[in-house]
Image (cartoon, rainbow over all chains, first blue to last red; front, top):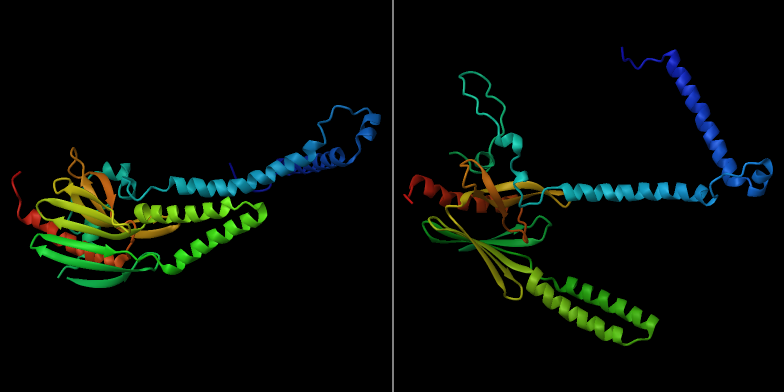
Length: 126
Length: 187
């Protein structure tokens, strides 16, 4: 079925990707470093501007740096404020069904209301 | 009427004063730490040093008078709108709960919640600015659903007492709120 074991097809895919990535990297280096006149003399004229050989990596690194800050900010924005009911309950807890109490059986799992939890923690029973 | 010392969530010293006016009326007041002279001097010196640096760069003396003006106006705005001196909670068993905040300039802002709307006063914990804090809050009853909570009103937002102070306030409030269950009134 679906096992992560090495297979001949997977080895071929891996090798094809390996060759492809090396080819892409050598092509990028040629495009970035070889002067335009040499490329024109070979007949290869339809290349993007060399400006992009520097601009694209810079865009990528700046985007990664902003991504850290953006993720931090999104997390802070998604945190429920102190005055919201989401800190106390949610849809699943509101719609939960009350199961009947049976003798000598483990009580069913349920969301305990916050008033009950507070009484248990902070008001000691004498 | 005694005053007990506690600490806020940030570590600053606060004081809790509990007064019992009658069997069903209690007032709990938390006094926030006062404006420190050293932090006031530090902020003023920093603003004036920055203004002097700008003056040296730009040779324009308006920067200096603007800095003095900004410092004065900023201090007045801070004392009147931001710096809370005391937060108090007045629980009257059959009437309601009154929450008062007194600012450093003397301004007082009051909110009253009548007892019919109050479901319970609980200590809740929530995430606040990369910390998990305990805070006291009033749960308001949802008129349509007897088990539901329509709104959460957080209390003592500015002084943020720690759990030991909150437990004292919680026990005081619960003693009064229990009375409305044992002596049901027909409304």
